[in-house]
Length: 609
Image (cartoon, rainbow, N blue to C red):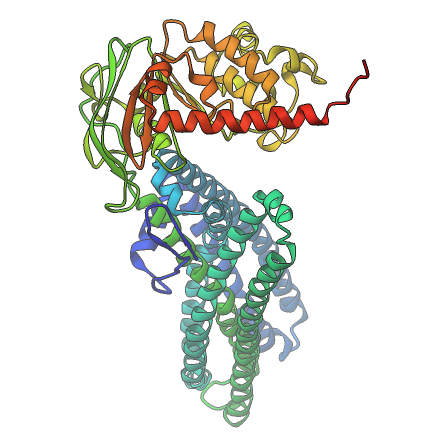
């Protein structure tokens, strides 16, 4: 169980009915683009069912008309008809399977695209509430669970119903008394099916919950393996995984037990029905037109009648899986993003004058305020720094400016217009953010700088040169074409930070945001970055969140935040003169740096005079 930032309790609840007409109707909507193929598949299935119904009927005719009278010529002809029907059945089944698999794969493609597209539109609060492992399960495992319902579920059930109806009609037409004897076992079969459905449904729900929980646990632990190993949590985490895996195993075994009991139970009932046919047929043989051919045909039809019912376990599993997976997928698709572009949007061509926070209040959870009545102003071309202790609300200001979240009270204005009146892409296109935790995608260095945009190679290289990343990129095995691996694992922390600078610069933003962007860079790289930033920030608006106060001494204005409020404002020298919070922070950092310098001096070897 996990709690998101929004405070919503997260659990992989699987609710709903074994069969939900609303969900089925919605699922069938995905078949609409392929309705011609579905019609063709259904028609093929009808013809296939008719071909299968013909087998026992031909057997009856062969026995009664040709085998008993010993008519060899007629027996040969009907054998040829039987073989022709078998060949037709093979062709029809081949066409039907290929059609339904093609439809199923295309529907899966459409649902995956719809789900991923919707996820891209969701606001950051949604991802705060939902772990990555759960969302990955939705797009992969849950969508895959729908494949069978389209390939061997819905249409196959339709085929089974058609087949059962046909068998009932043919059996009643041949001998209604023997048909009623055959159907006398149906109440027992219905009761066994009811028990199976009730037990499996509960077990299956638990199984789906545990699989999603297992995926989320794996994703979290693999992503955080460095922390796991650093704090020696391997044994504890292994035990947690073992407990979760053991519960998953026991639930799966229980589900298998129900399936293993249902199949043989249906077989036993079908054998009992065949025994009744033989027993009753023996007494009624030659009476009321009951022939040997009819008796043999009835046995064959009984076997075919109970076969689709025996397969009900698999069909029910497919349907149950589809209902549960569909419900979870549709739950995501039905969740509307909280942060959206307005219907009537104001154009945002260029940033002209100022950014202004006007009495802004903000909380991630109800009224647990992170920002309290914050008012600030950033003029065009200004470099404004935000400093303060962890949790003071610095990063929240950046998140609000980019509309990752919306304020509860107050307004954020750009050139006098509330940012909620701009289209979100227009707003974010003007802002480039360099974060402390750099995220790089799998792909080349150049791809990570241009991020899919059609930026010329010279723009990419120029951005890397300004960010002082060009030199180390050139030293990589394939230069700008070097694959950085997942999350940039093949690069050092400092190198990833330099690439994030190049990425921001390549898009030439009008507003540049640095969120403690130099905190992970060593002193040498920091000096190179500071040199590049002095040229980059000239006549460019910048908001700098800094932990190292030495990096923001030349800022036009420094805002000191404490517990969600702006307590001090001024230049570096003005704030030092006030002897307030900023002075104490600066003095504390200066003393820490002095201790490090003194320690390094002690460790240096002394040279004899």
